[in-house]
Image (cartoon, rainbow, N blue to C red; front, top):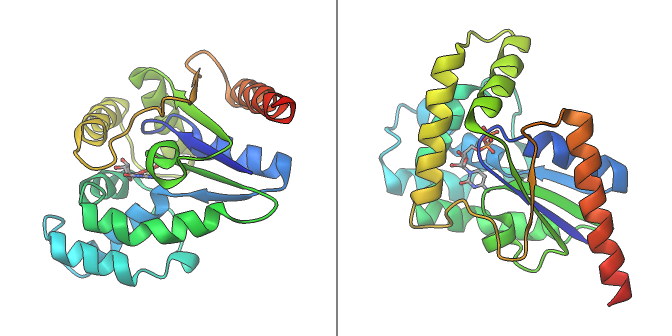
Length: 213
Ligand code: CDP
């Protein structure tokens, strides 16, 4: 069983993915971390993010199963840099096999990202597309960053989110978009528990129709 979750920056995909995975006893992969990790290696080596070949090389050699997950990887700067390197097709190609293998985990897997329902797991049993207004997403990310002790300004985050959405939606390779068979959940007016409950209802309704079919 595969649950694919896609959506724009700071839409709450990660939290939802983690909670759904816990609920069903499935494995969970936040695929954004893979692109963030590629960006981090380039930055640590002083290589400009515009070096496509170097980015692809880093992606091919990334130790995908053992990412060092820390505040810097999850920080705002790395999200922006990830969105630059993730637009390169060879970078995406290099990370595809690992994501697909992850999706084959038993008894099931939850993957969240931008292209899970469209490219990585087009046959996923359940596809969710999570949205919220840019302002609400910026508010959430602002709270999250402050909570982690990072310096953050709401206005700067809102600009960053809009720029990143724009880049992710308009790139030629695996653009951010809802799969034709995805169920869209707008979480603008939902808190984390409300979003989880609404997502769970959608997953359960899909599972019920699967067993009937
Ligand atoms: O957590 P947040 O929504 O801010 O970002 P993320 O999910 O960690 O993703 C960071 C960046 O990686 C995104 O802006 C995308 O450009 C890229 N990404 C992607 O292209 N495909 C994915 N499956 C996941 C992330």
